[in-house]
Length: 345
Image (cartoon, rainbow, N blue to C red; front, side, top):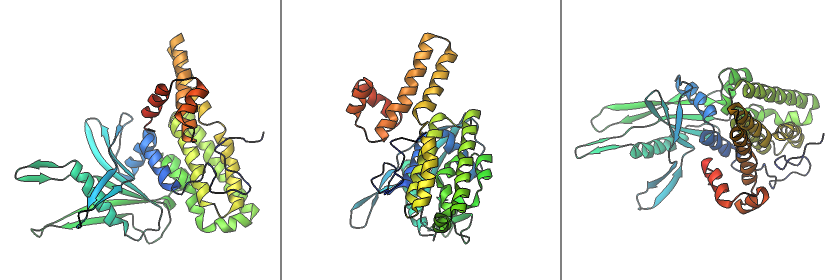
């Protein structure tokens, strides 16, 4: 059957006008997973910082906009990729993560320290004779490989009384992880960026059908394993949907100059997207409804499927709230309530 879905990129004469195209696709993918997918974020943080969070751990998002005051009095807005707390068994830890698509050269560390300082100010404890600043646990995800990059860097502070303070910043590199590593450690946040491991050979793959077929089989394998994680309950339907869509978006941008690769990978992902997000999330909600064993439960499942699937998908595809309300015969206020629950408005 021919794949038809509004989010599938055109395979011929494709252009930046495709629904999948975004100049900020890499950052968008990171912020989406961090901002909406707890079951993806918590295992990632646990691995990066050597934590052992339980299944009962929860995430509390914090504001990611800060203003840095310059000497001339001007304020500059800085937006971090993520700032959040993880709460587990009455213990709360503060985190700040950044996703870096440029090749690492150390220049990001000044920005990392500035962001950390602003976050520390938000959580400062002030008394007439004392100011206490609590810096967040900070880490960087590096998308592009480099053999010279260490596993961590250190930010050191030389204080006025000639004492020193320092903290480590782990650098997690996509290139260090195989597909087996990703699934064994539940590092699902790396899947949308896995295509970066092929960046230096994309031109060659684009001209060699046998290598293109190998890449195709690898992505088929990735998606088959994702299906398995969903069935086992290691991934929510919403996070599963997010990974598929974000993988498509990131790959579409990175392969923009390799049309054969873009077409092949796009066809694979198009087949997966056909089942997203309406049917997966609808089925999950419907199943929950049936488990309640009452008529209200079934209705709840059907409504949940619609809320989490069709409405959210239409809004993310650019449809206005008014148009969505008319299409599904739901009030505008109800649409806004659904979107607000997902932090979309």
